[in-house]
Amino acid sequence: MPPARSQLGAFGERVAVRVLTDAGMHVVDRNWRCRAGELDLVARDGSALVFCEVKTRTATGYGHPVEAVTALKRRRLRGLAAAWLAAHDEHAPDLRFDVVGVLVPPSGLPRVRHLRGAF
Image (tube, rainbow, N blue to C red; front, side, top):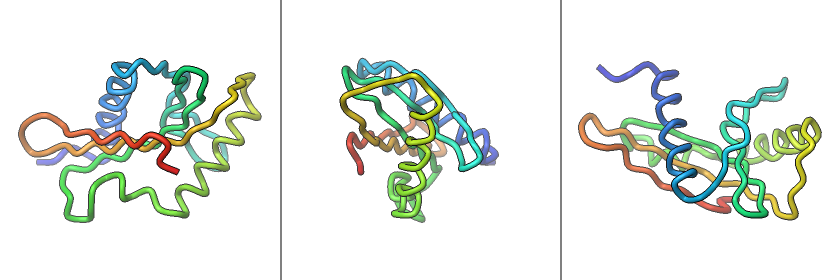
């Protein structure tokens, strides 16, 4: 039986954190919420501040997880990033939006696609 959606999402975020930190990034915030929504991960990659959306699925029947970040979702994430910046004393010369897609098959290891600068 597949895991509950919330469990699947939390697992995908843990996998994404590991992938990002293994790539040398430093996660500075997780699951930041405000009235407008939630940012999954905020990380530093050198001088860049990275807002990272994580999408997790168990199959590709509706497309790869990264395909779930639609134009509407991108617009919402930009607004959430502005809200996060307004609420924190973080400064970065570069901002970037990444997407991490985690595909969790019924057996075997998760497959991860990290799109740097996805939008």
